[in-house]
Length: 132
Image (cartoon, rainbow, N blue to C red; front, top):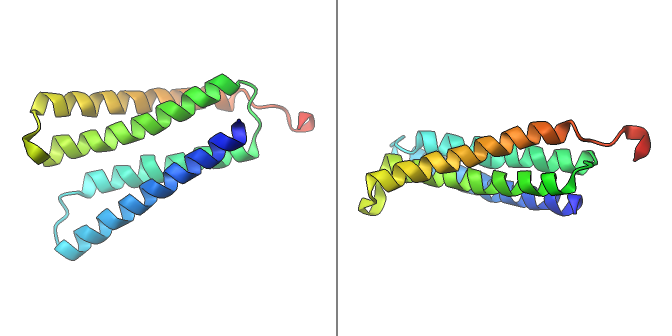
């Protein structure tokens, strides 16, 4: 299960990395940096964090498998929610209701914050090197 989560997180990171670099390329080509905060968060929480978690789960064995899965799901949902919520809040596409966009943004960020807190706990629950 842990190897599945490692690969899953790295694949999600790769998707975020592609989206972030395409967005950066678009901004450079258009000469407009309106997407800068969204671009930065896509690359930081989507690409960097997901990739780091995936590598951690590949290197270390975690005793709490269900906590690992909960951390992975909250990370994926939170990263998508935060970055999509930022896009809805800042860019206001499709005349989305501002209250809905703000709540989407806040909930996504809160779920991601929970995921980071869970990751701190997960790092405390690794097996000793001699037990591997």
